[in-house]
Amino acid sequence: MDETCQLIRDEFEERAKKSIEHLRDTLSQIRTGRASPALVESIRVEAYGTSTPLNQLAHVSVPEARQLLIKPFDPSILRDIERAILTSDLGLTPNSDGKTLRLSLPPLSEEQRKKIAARVKDFAEQARVALRNERRDANKQGEQLYRDGQITEDHHRQLRDAIDAAIKKLEAEIDEVLERKTKEVMTD
Image 1 (cartoon, rainbow, N blue to C red):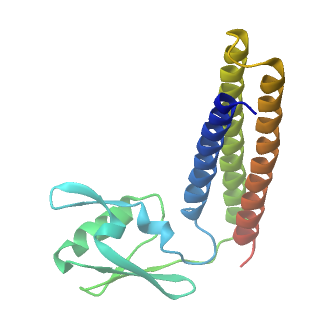
Image 2: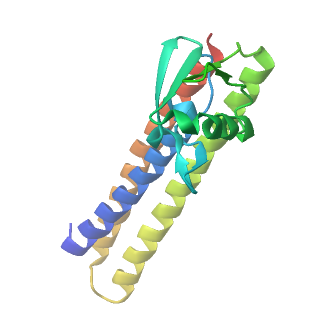
């Protein structure tokens, strides 16, 4: 394959992998039946006059399967953290002992699990659409190079085939991530 085609393919794969990483990050923040520090890491807390991610202000641990323990590095911002959790879309009420916050996750009902599984499937579909957009852009670049006479027809065909093979592999990876997260959501 031509050096220019290889560059297009490498750029495509890099952007496509970022789409999958974004999917993984998004899914890690979705609540399942078990507690995970990723549930609260992205919550932004108004403290010290700025909006700061919770994981930069406190240590988050999982003392039990359905409980999160949040211990601020500075106890004076405990109220700010509590307020941020209450205003987040988690739907959880923190219990404070003056030094730490405890978040107890109630068990999910079957209906809630199905709704969450549907959201997970939507996120996976968004990742697939992002992959297709990346493929379209890479194929356009290859087509333009072919039209300009910078690459041969064989190189153009090889580029398209390489991108299609990469897409199949990446879509299988998305399916695997989707299956794993759906299983995690649906089991107790």
